[in-house]
Length: 590
Image (cartoon, rainbow, N blue to C red):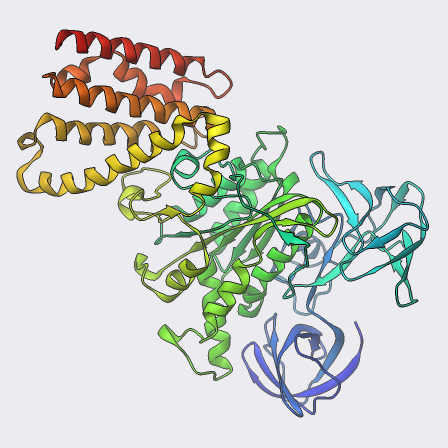
């Protein structure tokens, strides 16, 4: 840290500090405040004064205390050692801090984000005199069993490689090579580099988002899919299962890497994440899920400024692994707490509030965050993606509040959680009436290729039935179900079957916790076939009781538990028995 004094404290207002006598400072410069060297960031700059937001408790800070400038923006360290680590909102490693402190983070503590003593086995893939540009791969480090960490030339650098070390073990501070840049300077290269958290990492171009992020959750994959590189919002009131849904997606989705941001959540929720994630087993490798996860823990009792920064810290880490050619999923839980941090800081800076006290720039900040998602061609030429799944916690479950409404403007997939479903223990509690996905047409060709051409027609038919059921339920409330003809009661019957046999999933059942897309397509086709054949037979004079009595009906209800993902022949047998049963009924009423 550069120890140059750039000013002195004039006024302290919680985490917001006014600094006077500013000299030689820049916007968003990283600073240290007071003799305890509290971490801060310069967020407002005038002729001879500035405003700094401090990422630590400012108790005891007084006027005329010095403010030191770092001549750099608030940045994260990017390199081997990030995966499996638990950070706070400004990338301080919590486990390393605990080893040097007590259970609470002491003010001014300075622990490197990446372990300086650990040696990594580096394998170079370039040679001297190669011409390299930003994003080029210098070599690889096998960080975990699944993740090969690719060491990159920092974006913005370009030139001829003067030297590169031989294969061997190096720390993140050991020089591994040198680049003679185009402007004639010599720049040393390391296993790590820094990047400002508020600056989006560059790419070559955006790619079409036509491959779904497969989550194994049937209500998501089959009804409201998200593409890799897409943006999702999960709004829901307290207790509706936002964190549970994100954890299920984090465990089962086919992303290469998970960045989980606990932004302003209660300490017990973050504790559950920190204790449960290391125990979870990655179904694709059989090893701990932490070997493909980075956790950012920023609880509600931590400084509010660090909560505001945690979102940017997480997305910058995700972009770094995207630049290596990986598909990354970011779980932000929750963006409402982040927006509340913006509101508090804005109020302390005496800015003009907008609706419900949020700052007028709230929509801009939300847009900036979600725009950093996408499927990209990296500077190195490889495809990579960042998918953002952000939870929203509207007060009282009111989706008309500002954070939810502004978020809906910038996302293309909306998984609305329903309190009535959660109270009925129907999980995932994603409402099939209020949710939507604009990625459906983009990923439909992929689904048809993997699951057959019938998937689109089956999904449309089932969604139409669910809409019809809503209208019929209003009639049922007035006159009761017995007053309806069998043709309409059959709609209710099939929708109930679909909800129980398809949409509802048991996260504790080894078979039902996750469904491959082929199983999902076959299941939805069986239920759609039951509807099509059954409705035709009812028109011929059959009764609803006869349709319920077919033996295969119970097999359809139990198929999500009874048919494993690695042997789907059982579903073909159920479909064959269903067709035979319907043929027999049809013959009876011919």
